[in-house]
Length: 443
Length: 172
Image (cartoon, rainbow over all chains, first blue to last red; front, side, top):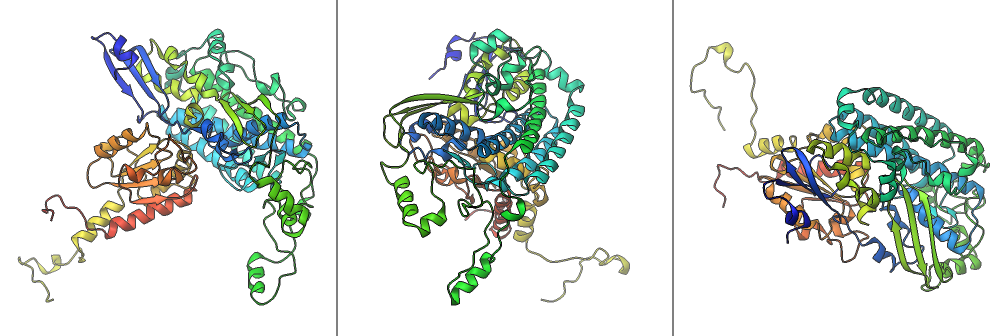
């Protein structure tokens, strides 16, 4: 069936496809271009190649079980997606979370934001041919993902931020590791500033290409770095502060023109601010037990297994400090006290009848988390804009409707207008600077 | 096996100067092919991030001879299917596979390509082996870079010991 552009295009002009699997474009999206020579007269963007039925699937999952699906929306910064969903649920249920868990959330979300920006810029630079910068960016991202892994147990799809708090405490040695990672990150940022900022090729390909005015950005519903590059001072963290962002000191970097270069520069500056936020959080975070107390004295798991072959194991078994719920006494202040909304610690489940009942009540069909009837919207600042969740509850343990406001969708919808009148080669840095993430765009 | 006499008489000092070894043609072709895999990354979703990690300096699968990323299916030996394949994407994947020249291999990376993963619904293809043949499956959602490296080694083993496809040999 001919598409809109195929019907409307002048027969003398050339129609070509970019995508859905195109060498110079990451992600799966199809852009059909109507060309006069190399000049783009019109274009048509087709999305939906990664439609995975997220919203419909969520209607068949309980509020607790749908959390892993939110990881896979913006898969570069899954923790922020977790946070958006979880905070929407907390608003609906009226849960207060402990202060320590809020700081942990902020630290991990900012780490995610940095890794999101790093990946976006890595892809953008690689597609423009700056392979060195790409390798540096990814190297910096690895350092951050190592920290995320040490705390959450997974590199990407973490499901770490839970309704009522977080799943486990920070890694006991988080301070030194974060210090090392921020140092490496700052060095990479400095290197890449040096590689790209005044690079003739980079400037030629990005400066004054795909300029988005403030008005256009607002009209399309932009968010995040793309909006701020167009000189609109709007950041959900400042406008409607959530968690502890109102107690932290950070700036919102703004661009001048709203071209590709500004979108690059705003991302670079935002990463520096995020690193600042992380450092402040580490100083302000309420104390838990010290690292010495967190290391559990006891049998090594292997020895325990050996012992169990001949007699009952009575000593405590040394487990990873981050293992979920294994030592509730040593990790206070990361989950809410309300037993209705949290999975009870495993030691309770296995040793006491109350814990067992709590466990059953939480996981049984039509029990578990049942918010009151009604609907709620809440949004957080994601990697590429405002990540909002709209949840309608009918009083059961499954959402009646769950809608995601993915920032990419609004940004990519402006792509047709942005590349109009430019050249084919300009599509690539423009598309890269938008940070299109398929999971969030097509859901 | 007797020693093979050289057909021509070379001067004594030139005879075996470079040394020699015996092998099978099938083996040496496998050896050549497994270390010069040009791959085409068909990246759609989350696993692509881990693919990037595995491909970049930190894990660097160039060490195994698969570092050459070609962005044209016509010049690649191996198809890396990374990420969810939706019903809309399926014909594209099939086209890309058919554009590749023989001999070709396919690695399916991630739970979604294996079986649809957690997306058991109307939109997602429940395993790409319904569309194209697959040599190595990598489990995980997403798989760690180490798992991807392991899969590459497994594929190389397979290429080494498989019956090589010779163009000049008539197929039975």
